[in-house]
Length: 557
Image (cartoon, one colour):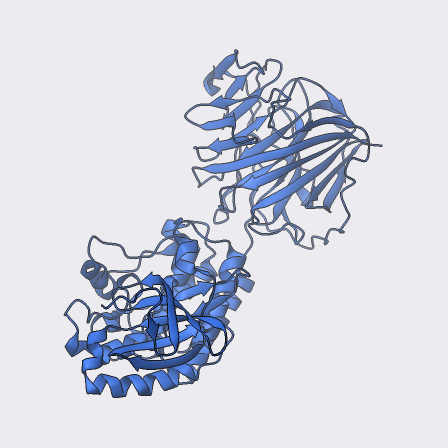
């Protein structure tokens, strides 16, 4: 393919710089002096212009593509041929791509998936109504601007190149991208809008699970998998996926086009219903054990072991195994659950879906209502937070913050800043959720006693929360929502960070998130004790990654 040089002209456009390169086209940033604007120019292989048939087809298809006007389709301003080079002129957009957003190989937050999917489906539906099938739908062809808006590009390019296949090599003539190609397109059969629906289904699958369903060592092997291999269930990769969402993905990715959604609008409507029907994740409370995964409905029965702790500590526990560390880091004790005295097994607490949960009031956090008792941004180690690294977890200072990592399923860790007892206090901390799994739990604890007895305030990226009381040797009791996890619209889903606050004193326990009161309860079991930070990995997720910053303790007036 011919490469254009900066300063070179292509028709009325002056080339500035190459901004993209692919097997079948190059993309350049160019300047259009007549209207004083930058544009993006997609240049097709020069050898195609040798064919009169292609030249005619190019004019026909380009006219159709240029008529597409939709908020989520990148507009084509112009098209033409110059010096044997066919090209499209499009809006120049300072943007990334959906491919770049998904390169981390992790699922996207559900609210973000919903926004991206609906924009893609709406753009496809519009194009299909105008008789245009994309034929090469993939994340790299979905541009994302700084506001998160999607702009779908490259409509009709694959069809143009298919018409020119006699002048392309055999490898070039394989149209579509192997990871996203439909079975019928992979077999060179006639395609319609249902082929695009399959490709959109692959994109949805990848956004939900963090990976595409079919991978192999060669592009041809991937294509064969689309044609003949059964689809790996999304739930086999992400066990907590709601059944309603999985069902929509499975229908979109049916091998036979007749079994798929017939239109993109039908696909989008089914997705909307799936979101409305999905049951929110609910987990049973357990002492020193992570909540059950959203897909689990079995009772959780765990009892906390009894143990003695040194002054100042960090703790990690898994169903009774405990690790205690002194503030100075010189005392480390590993306790085996078989050598601990435990209470009698707790009564089974089945997982239930809360009903009639009142909407919390939007009460602003009374920040620094009283005198500041402790302020720690973790930059100068003003406090001696307990730290620990072993095969199960790690709590360490890192980049002027306190970083908690868990490498084990069903694991609960916490750390305290000192050995002081606090009474009637307001706590705050900024939590950065590095792990997007919705079952990761994090928060604050207060009024910690000599044994494993304390209050804690916990939230999840799925918008769930609990204010709970831990009692040594007993199953934790959730003081909110009839001893069940509750859900609140005041907790943003899958936010990158949260500011969590808690009032702990005067017989009242109040949870705040991002400046709003989420819930408040009364309990007088504990009145004074240590304070700290906690992280809790999901029962079916062997990892959690949370960073804490800007910790604050003030007195309650």
